[in-house]
Length: 303
Image 1 (spheres, rainbow, N blue to C red):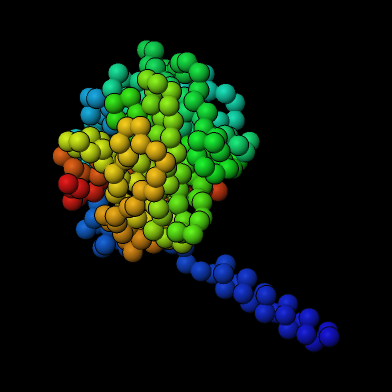
Image 2 (cartoon, rainbow, N blue to C red):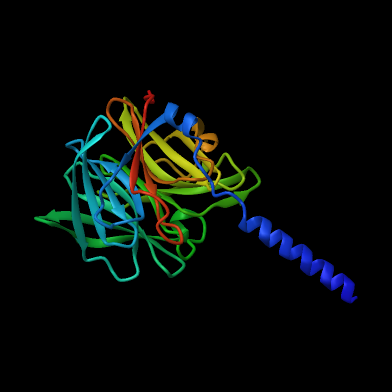
């Protein structure tokens, strides 16, 4: 018996040593360079960027998860010409910023996650000089809207807007006879109506972490990031028509970034510019800051 215990202990130690000696995940530089340019962002210490939106003037907006701060970024090609740090006032304590969507009137909608299970929330922000202030009551999304329990620290992970509609993807996944799915709740800000849909996931572990949408004739098109460590895909789908009942949304893979990123970068926001180029924002904060604050500016447009 003693010999067996010693053998197991020695084996466990060897496994621990091997794991500790594994090389850290590294990006495939050649593949990455063919896909995108890496553009550093000076956040003045506001790490953990999440959510990405384009406003009516073409500027980018992103938020720091735990800093109660937003950043307005002016981008010219692959060069940042200005970065404005704007504090967010009026958020309840314990709400982390996770998602951002720009409204046509200039306001922002931000999605949050909290420490308490059961709800995800959206807050409307209005710029007041040098700050963004919460205005009005938050929109609370629960199981009745999403069709699934909203776990603690699994809130409104991604958002986009077209007209008066805001689409919100939650950081959780459901499972049924047809496979895995992510909840997508569409909220009509004018009427208050909200409808939950099921975005069919393509991988065994991925969840949605970035979302953008835009009108294309009679269609409303959307792109999203499905990711979980080594899994990183950009997928496309159409949003349901206004007022449509709950339905399944099948995605098409637009880009498989897994072989290039190899789990080294965590993409937490995605937008499509008017010329079709994609931009993603990197969340560099996981058990500490583990890389630069940066944008990925993709080279090939999505039509």
